[in-house]
Length: 194
Figure 1: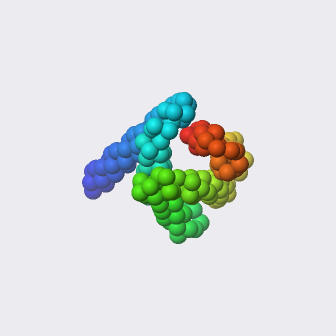
Figure 2: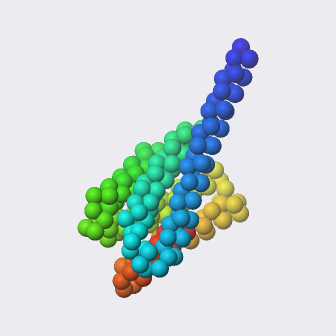
Figure 3: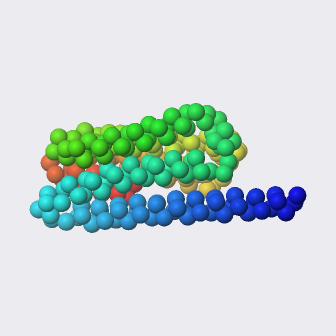
């Protein structure tokens, strides 16, 4: 009996290990795409205009794919959502909103970059602010539940999340506040470091 339980445990651990490897690889691809987009964003204005469609397809579809990676990471977590969060249904709703708020802009710019570029960026940037707030609330609630409020690692995570929130808000303000192409270029730098 003990041997069967050990075999089952090892099988589950191998499966979790493969899932974590796949999630890590997908995350690294996302980092690579953001590095590529940062380089493209740094090019001369003529180059950026010539490659605008490719650039935005990379940007919006990579963001959508990363939203899926986040969902898989939460769903694939070995612990039940109820053990981590006091409101697991709210977590599920937030995952749904994140996926929808990333696929809609991706589909819109695919249909017509010319017509939907600005509203798609607006949706994306507002979603980033929302997700930063959600990350902050999640970290806080997990720490409170685990009684880790004095933990320095938690403090670091809360500070990083607060910085991410500030970057997301700055990005939206820059995109809407600066004139012309410079607004989009600067906002993209913020986006790809976030």
